[in-house]
Length: 158
Image (cartoon, rainbow, N blue to C red; front, side):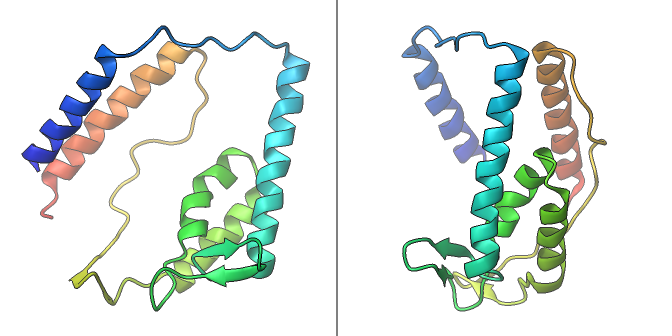
């Protein structure tokens, strides 16, 4: 584990050495921001409707054939698992509840994957959802969440 952390730190340090000045997006007014947010929300909603119509209960949608694709013999529900937080953040609550229900009732790790059994479980909620007034407040909270997760994982016997 320490070897992988070192590799990750070394890669990040190497990227930082070659980083250029960050690109700053042009400022947009509140109305333009709201329009863009609505457009993003609608695109995600469109993608989710395609998944539910053509690939519900499978890993992902094969968009050209309008069929389903599974990476393993039994589906791991990769699309719903991956999309759940996005659906929640975008306020697509009905869709998020559909995904939660599917995951809770159909996701099953009681089989071997690559010859090893994988078990997942909810351990502990770090904190409730909240909005942040500033980017610095968000960064501070992310760092605190990271420290809390490290403490939590340090107590687990993996």
